[in-house]
Amino acid sequence: MSNQIIQLGVVGCGWAGCQAINAANASSRLNVIAIAERDPTRREQAANDYAVQEQYTDYRELLDNPSVDAVYLATSPDGRLQQVLDTLNAGKHVLVQKPHAIRAPEVLEMEESAQQSGKTLQFCYFMRHFPHNRQIRSAVQNGAIGDLYHARIFGKFNAIPDFNANSRWLHVYGQKGGSLGQHYSHELNLTWWWMGCPKPEWAFASKHVLYPQYDGPEGAAEDYFTGLLGCEGGKTIQIDCSRMSHSDSGSVVELYGTTGAITNGGISRFKDGGFVRESIDEPIEIDHGELPEEVPVFYYELNHFAMAIAGEVAPDVSSDDAYTFMQILDALYDSAKSGEKVYISS
Image 1: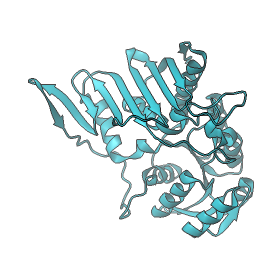
Image 2: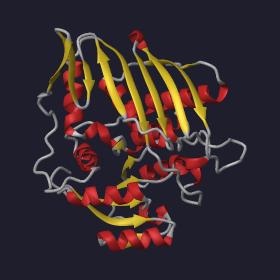
Image 3: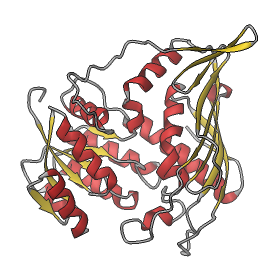
Image 4: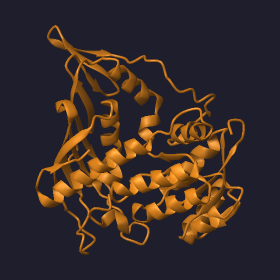
């Protein structure tokens, strides 16, 4: 399929779905021919903005379209499992937006279905695909900062979503829509990946619900989350994140090693009584070909998906990584709810 333009269908036309349409159409390998969205306003807006001819209310109608080769699922995780299984059973490749599921075992069901269908299954975490982030990973894995021992994430999103039919999952605790799952799981996944995806062993976490808009049995989603993840070899990742904070301090995504650190996209070292900066100039291992003049935020991820369908690269995020990372999120959320340290089984 390497010389064939992949005809893509996009399910869900919120922010992520529209970004996916824009990115796919910027790639010479993909063409969005159909969208599915229950909300008529969002559906019509996306169709008009991106000139998509085929429009459906129900995603199953999109799956019945024989011209659709692959599907991008930009939907909420509470209905994600069935949508992935239906897509694979319909003979379509699928790229799954994050959070990938409600609980980790659902990812195993998705992978089993992908194996049976023979279709490509890829999971989203778009920051992995930025060329500079891949260069950082290569440098770290090649020993540029010595032995890795810790990563630190501190970030603020500063926006609480409205409570409506499209955003309900963002307000329900455990559906992975709070400050950790919806926002800063990107950075958590990135630093874990930079470390080489070490086997997680335990998690300890706490949460604060500051502006609850949901009062159902699960409880309201977190507005502030703090956690510590322990991995094999004694490696740890610390995360503090919020979706509404009155602090004006800057965000931090850092990785620490015995001879240096990754800070602000480069290498920092303390030498001769002061800090020195080093740039990262590792070769880029994936050639995305000629880039568009303006590169959309999801471009590298969508282009990688097309390359994976063609058999040129392995899907990234893979099912194995998606399952393990979902175990990490489950453990952090479970610990914050119980107040106890949670151990992660292999």
